[in-house]
Amino acid sequence: MNVEKKSKRQLRREQVQKKQSRNRLGTVLLITLGAAIVLYAILAPTLRPIAEVVTIESRQRYMANDNSMGDPNAPIQIVEYSDFQCPFCDRHYIETEPLLEQYYIDTGKVLFTYKSAGNWVSAQTAGNTESQDAAAAAYCAGDQNKFWEMHDALFENNRDVENQGSFSNARLKAIAEALGLDVNAFNECFDGGKYEDRVQQDLKDFTAAVPAGGQQGTPYFVLTYTAGGETKTDFINGALPFSEFQVKLEAILNEIGAQ
Image 1 (cartoon, rainbow, N blue to C red):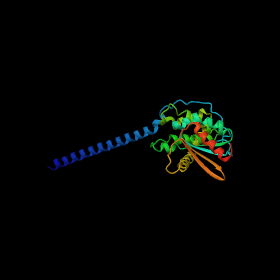
Image 2 (tube, rainbow, N blue to C red):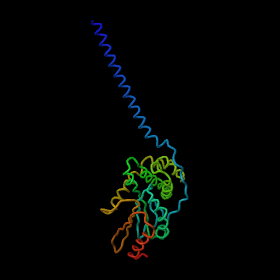
Image 3 (tube, one colour):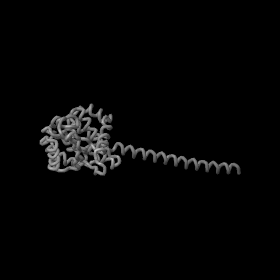
Image 4 (cartoon, one colour):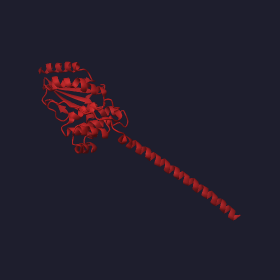
């Protein structure tokens, strides 16, 4: 009788042990599967072939200095808050910016500065940091006196490419290489996050520049000038045609007597 009871207890114990072993194995498999999924999500963007890099002949900017162009003593300063992944910003870059250069920047009337507000846009898309990364890449190119070359290349390389992936780290580095940058110096700057704080400061500047109740969007332009000893500010919101800029700029020049 005792032997029989002992055998039954032993059998139940073995059954419990087998069940526990199966449960442990199932847990290990689930953890392994979860880790594999996370690893794939991290590595997949780097394993996916990058889109072909478009190379262009960038136009020279008058008195270019980092992210500014034009005479530092120009009577009007324009700061553009933009986004390299914004189609309206691209429209401004193609249609309006060259005319601003020709008639106002190259003639010493306007100092023009580009800042990125791409993190405002991508902050609404969880996990997408490509706009900020592109802005940081432009500043890193600026270390090699090629901010505007990178500025142009980024806009040219966002067209016909889905936003998500157009500015992956690998593609930004490929664009930098195509521009003839010192790749090692660029990668050290970019991978080291040298300009992360500056990109975030651009966003803060943008937020502070928009009047209370004003509509935030890119591109957004802040015009600053001095008239009668008073510093004044005006705004242009959106990718408006050159004629809209011309009206405002001519009115300002007339006001300050700098026609």
